Amino acid sequence: MKSFIKVDPKSHFPIQNLPYGVFRPRSGGDPRIGVAIGDYVLDLAALAAAGYFTAISLADQKVFNQPSLNAFMALGRKVWREVRERIQHLLSEDESMLRDNTELRKLALIHQRDVEMLLPAQIGDYTDFYASKEHATNVGMMFRGKENALMPNWTHLPVGYHGRASSVVLSGTDVRRPNGQMKPADAASPLFGPCLQLDFELEMGWLIGPGNEMGKPVSIENAEEQIFGLVLVNDWSARDIQAWEYQPLGPFLAKNFATSISPWVVPLDALEPFRVAGPKQDPAPLPYLQATGSGAFDVHLEVFLQGERMTERHRITASNFRYLYWSMAQQIAHHTVGGCNLRPGDLLASGTISGPEKETRGSLLELTWRGTEPILMENEEKRVWLEDGDQLTITGWCQGEGYRIGFGEVTGRVLPAERRTPTEYALQQSTK
Image (tube, rainbow, N blue to C red; front, top):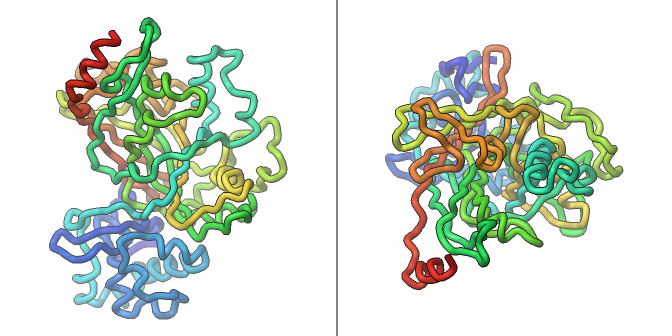
């Protein structure tokens, strides 16, 4: 399949992809929904106004003239597929309807450099999982030793926690180093100040479509029907704050200051050619988590770091979404088995994705083994944790025959912590 729009083979956005996003033209106008095709954004609101979707069972033909994807996501997979097939047909090289309509093309096709991307969804709830066995094992070894690396429940259920939806931000948003309490091993009492062990987490997330009624779980067989599409996620983490606060309930301030996501939402249907079997699960999960078929996807992931004194970004790790032990379907089934209701626009994330080799680990915590093995950059700088001014970028794609299904990038730059008040500074000094 080819589009009449020229697309480079290494572009993340060929006609086989068509990810959805919310944009606003820099020339002015209201936010609305589009899809990425090559270097362009196709304005779906403009196509709908021209009557190009009247044959599709849309409850509201203005569903694309919205500042979020929520209303469209609520319509379910049947409608998503009809819309996707219609867009692919309109963009195909052999279809003249849009190709030869010069006036509509000028209106509906906007270069990506001429738009401002916005958060793709109004995220009501955000759940972060801990679904990589290699990541959980590495972290467990650091804090509890090799013999007790995995908690007894880990291979029986997808461990997760509820994050903070209000601080989910779009790629390109600067992230300020958080302040908080920390307790060094040699300190008698906790100290207050800027996080000293700021980290990234290489993750992928998925946005929920129609959702389920409260009290009615989503079965493992139907779980993927809830997945509208996927994004890249960087769940920034303050490791020293987390080490002190997480007992007994888990992450709080260490995670709630920022979570970055990419602007383009790749439809699950676009990933079908790249479906693969996930890791063997032993012991076999309980029946409500047992799935037939392959539930993982071959998505190549890379992470780059560029400091203020670096002329180019440096790749610090490369991993793959297929390493995830618990599948997206299993995470959804477990999330709802107690009766929890998911809603359109909810964000679920995988947790840090790490592979079996050191160079496939998905966080600085693992890459530097809790600070004992610094990373050497190309300009001879070293990194143990993120420094002020560092820019962290995650990218990912599936490689097809002559095309890529890509996610674009999620990037963020670290800003210094907010200056403390005199009272807070005195409190820190008094506890040293």
